[in-house]
Image 1 (cartoon, helix red, strand yellow):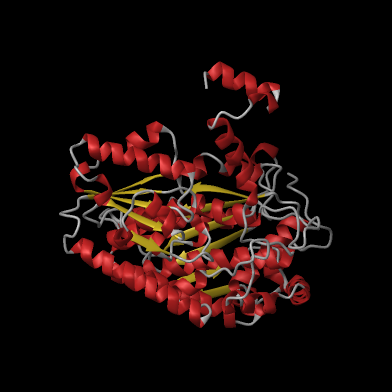
Image 2 (cartoon, rainbow, N blue to C red; image 1 turned 90 degrees about the vertical axis):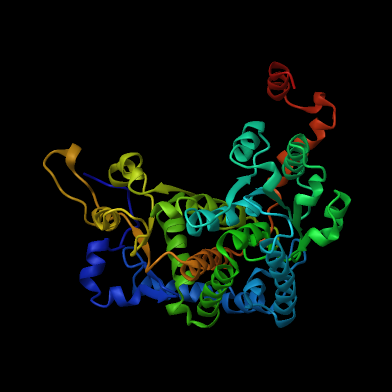
Length: 495
């Protein structure tokens, strides 16, 4: 059975393992309680040398230094990217400012835990994009079964989403956290108004007294009626999809506890130090970016699958979709010229073992080559027979082996081509340190890809046009400027 084509002269995965006895040691890494295995990719010594030369020519070292020193790395908006400063890894002045804002966040957490907002039983976290995806991942992964608070996340402007979010919450004992970088996002403000109405309808006399705003524009939150004492600020240089380390993580800090939140930052800082100081040949985010470039540019792969073999990490693929596709879904370089290579693949995925019975047929026998990533955890954290977790892990490892090995058969229907790449991230245990390191790994991998491509990963103008047209239509703009199809759809829906 013929599988997807690979570039001429490229060894198969089985050939690479046979030819390189030290392959495992050269393409596996251990950082902050997480094991990264990129050995089942088509990278070899020669390709690695070629990519190292490309990284040098692309100015990788200088770009990395600029990121950590607080220089302008977002030229289209004239900003640094200061999310690394939120975990103490950036420019000293930015790290000091982040620490001061974190101290204010800590004071608010302490006040809330001391009863400043009454005896809370729930949190309604309102935001969209990174203002929700990051905190939701943290809470779902680390606090879903251990917190005394019921935490619900609301992003969609759909009224059904609002009703679903508030259904288990008691309005009298719910804290509303509204997170928005600009505090002008249509969906967030509409849902905040709905939350106020929900509180008021339940007899809460001062709805705004139960609202905390998290924003880079505190004046905009004040204009929305939020008292300054209940506003937490984060920096303009912290992009939304990189913001969970900042005050945007308030709901996670309240749910997990402050010590856990600090440990999350420390785990990320461990990965920061690795990315910043490790030699390129031993730098796992950069090695992963080399594999991404290889599959996108030489093998023509347009997607990458991410499968979490741990139910606690079920939101990771959704988080990565925004991080990777919003950051690197570009078609021009930093100076506005057409980019020379395919940029971000489509990131998609699911949860093992469910996905094995849904999409793995295509991964094993389809004509489309999809690099696959498995994320698993050695230690389970449930009360079931340990055999459950053992079988879960064995399934994850077996899938990677089967994708690589394949199986020949006289019956073409039962033949597996093999030679299909995968990478595995295996955490010792799922805790704040290891999760912080893994999320930071994906951030730095995204940045490394951008440097190799010559693009800016820190702007996202592509999300604006549709929102702008929707806003104009909501304000009664002239519909005659629209295409006939859109006008007909609006007329049919009665909007």
